[in-house]
Length: 108
Image 1 (cartoon, rainbow, N blue to C red):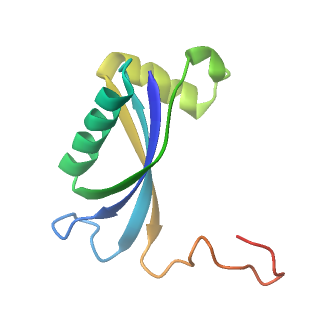
Image 2: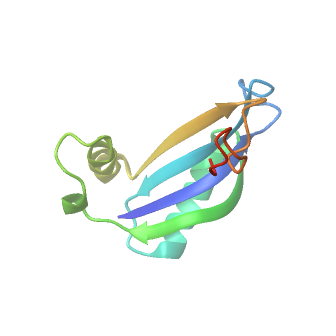
């Protein structure tokens, strides 16, 4: 099983286009080869109506890494059944930049 993370933006035909600026796509793929996992993840995200950016993270994961009750454990287990599970952590148009500084001067 691989966990991958991408930044993605809705395509113009996506129903949330104009309201959602982007998302971090967190992906569990039931593949044992990194390249195959990335290809499956990219294909799924594209077919869901998103433009996929660069790969942010990719690494093999094991069920034991997630304690019972952890949402990631549930997603891992579902990927064992379905082959892939993608969670889109979206932000709206006009949301503050992730790299902006907070009012107290610390990095966001």
